[in-house]
Length: 395
Image (cartoon, rainbow, N blue to C red; front, side):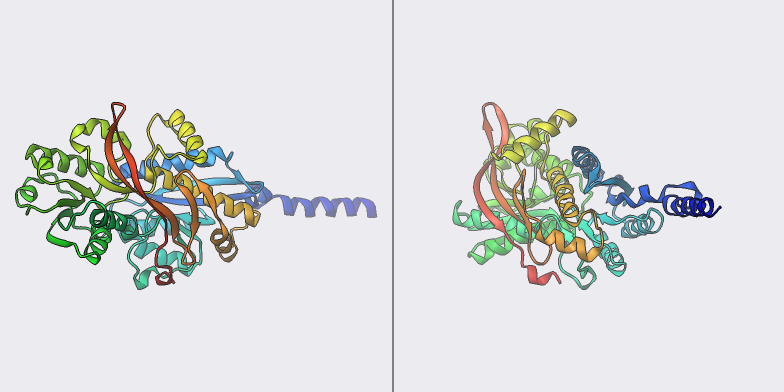
């Protein structure tokens, strides 16, 4: 009888450990790491949102949806268009209803100001797969990581190159009247002016602008025109109308926006864009083993040429998985933060690490659009290695 009672109690105890409420298996739940992702799946940036969505899944498939012996579940929420309150509501849903262990995003810079104070208050590791916004008090979050240098850090090499190498002394600018457009352009102009260059005119257009003729007919002539017009659709219209007015023959274009002109758009825009100079964090032609492997696998699956944002998404997952492997799957914010800060790796875009302020340190490539072997493509003309942000400004 004593043996029977003992066996009964062992069975009851094991059942209590093994099964959670409503008949769910508690052990299985404990072995799943839940990653929440805020992506712009609707609105003006939906193209990039869809790209991040499928490259996150591509990288997780590559890892077999596991890390450190634990299963991974990705839960994606649409952060909406430019309404920062939607992003905050979706973040709260990911935490409260879905019980995620960490968050990726949001994409929109303005939404950082609503989401990061919330994730900081929990606290929860929040990995921003794009650039940091300008430092403001609302952004203070010691568990936030940025997978790219700041907007200005990615474009200031073009300002240096324009003055030091191309010999330009004056520029006129057309850029999106939006914080991101201003930050990208500011990186260029700050370094160009620090060398002695002059910005003789600045024109700002709405993010929804479709007609650039009024801006182009108002241009003052300079050594070059610098643009930061967000998104390929806007860029395409700007270049077409620039060509229509014969301006390519009169004033070259420099782009103050990292990753401008995605390779997939270049053939349709034609020879008129040859000679444009910009900055890149990644090029499909980069000659390193990690890029050759990634480029081959990604293009075989998705039938498209990856740009820098797709690679940012891929590196985001790779870096996160490396840190989780180092913690044994522990997502405690302090433990995971320490592991992320120790993570260094070779990636398709070159060597990657975080500075102490949790912002990516990467090479930036100044590039020019050229026609090589009958193909229009970017070519690296100068590398500015290990661009490190001013980390002490990120608490």
